[in-house]
Structures are given as C-alpha cells and as structure tokens.
Image (cartoon, rainbow, N blue to C red; front, side, top):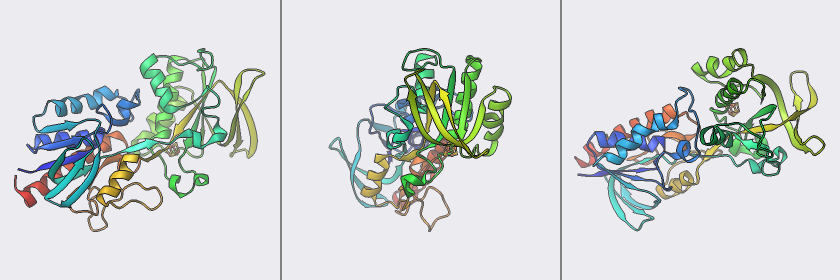
Length: 351
Ligand code: SF4
C-alpha cells in the first residue's frame, strides 16, 4: 500500500489529509509550525468570511478528524527538504531526518500576509495606532475590545486603508494582484465596530471596492446601509502623527472630487495583501513546480483543464499556494486534491 504526502496543514492541507484518510489511504501530513490550522489559527482570526463563523467552528472538525485518524501520520515543526523519483514512487526527505516513500504529493503551502513595513509612508511600526487588519482580528478575538494601542482608549474615528501590498505597481510586478478578501473583511470588521461601538466613526479608503459574487450585499451595502460605515474613494499618500492632538493624519487624494485632503484619525487599520509563503517558494524549487513569473504563486499545468493538477505528474497544488482564495474554496480544493491523489494511488500503485 502506498501513501500520500500532504505538505502544509492549513485549511487546504487539513481538508486534503482528512479526505485521503476517509478514503482509507495512509497519509503523511507535514506542518512547518507547531500547530495545525495555518493562518486562521496562527493569526487568531476572529470571524471568517463569508459565513461569519469562528475559525474553531470551521477548522475544529477537520483538526479533530485528522488528529484522531489512524490513517494520518502527523509531523509538526517539519518541512520537506528533498524529493527524488516519480509518480507512484517519490522518495521524500524531511527536516526531521526521516525519509518516506509516497505515491503522490499534495502541496498546500499557502500564503503569507504582506509586510506593511515595506510601505514606509503608511507609518506602520512608527506610530502605534497604525495597526494591521490581523492585529484588529487579534484585538477582537483575544481581548474582546477595540482600543488605541497608544493609550488603551476607545478611538473616536477609525480608518481602514484597502489594498496595502495589493494592486500596487510601485512595489513592482510581484504585487499587482488583488487580495480578494480585503474589501469584504473590512466591511465586516467595520460593521462589527459600529455594532458594538455606535459612537465610533468608521471610514474605508478604497481604490474601488471588490466584493465578489454573493459578498456584495453583506460586505459592501450592509456596512453602509445597516451600520453607517463610510466609504471614501481615495489614494493614501501618507499617514503622519500630530503631537499637538496626539492623533494620526491620513493624507490622501479624494479621487471623486479630485482634491487632496488630510483627515484626523485615532486608529488606522492597514488591509494587508497576500503573497506566496516562503514554504511555497521552497517547495516549488524542491519539486520543480511552475510558478507565475510575476506573483511567484504556483500555477496549474497547461496540459490539464483541472485547477489543481501541477506540471509534475502525481503532484497536486491546492489552495492559497496558487493565489488569493477564500477559506471555503481552500477546503473544496483540498478535498478535490485528495480525490486526485487517491486516483493516482489506485492507478499507479494499487492500494
Ligand atoms: S479585495 Fe479589496 S482590499 Fe483586497 S486588493 Fe482587492 S480591492 Fe484591494
């Protein structure tokens, strides 16, 4: 009987490993970190779009089933370091010193959030009241309250700055893609602020709002019509701090009325883009997987109509290692990759 290697135990990898285990296939699940669940768990996401569920509600059942399955061998704090052979008979070297033989591989190495320090003009790391949307999620999920880090007081005015590290040609060709989740999540976070703190004014600074498919009403219109979140079309030039009143200044060009403006804010939330993780780049090299020449995300094979078949036979790519994607699609792709990998085991190896 042959096994399948799943690289990465975020939502996609968990779904792939669970799917394979349910099909009775021995699965080796690698995770470079010390816990399962990927970004939603590691970064303490508060509420997941679009179903507004907690990460524990969505990922908890997957984590439990994988941990309890006799078909899954789990290696935490472990990375893939080498791979030889071909479909049906890959010899993989792991950073824990073990070597395993597997018939197929599922790559689910995910993404990383953009480092906002690369956009120095936005003041992240310089002014404590400039935070990221991840830090806001952590404030909600871990501390259960909204506050300005500089003085622990409730802010009067909060600004969300969309597209930080996304759709940005100043950063070069690597960051021109849309993050897909940022507008919707900000609509949700802005609504949550207004719901719990109706005296706090919330402003969203956008280039244009991209709430995909069925997300348009709940994450764009409802924030405005039901919660009073205000949307301002403008490009942010700089965020500064005024010692005179201890508040931030958001300097931008209002692109509707076409004039510059400078607005005082108490808390600024940077909505971070998505980039391929270091793990995705490393694994692409080890396995010889094709990457997009600009973004460096993995790309499927041109020879197959499937979105998860890689350029290497027997190796499947699923989830955010191929670009921005929502969590529900990650789970579906992980499950689809499990099916493809199981088919390889059945046809090339024979279970
Ligand atoms: S989803 Fe919204 S915030 Fe994210 S890059 Fe696209 S337009 Fe910008």
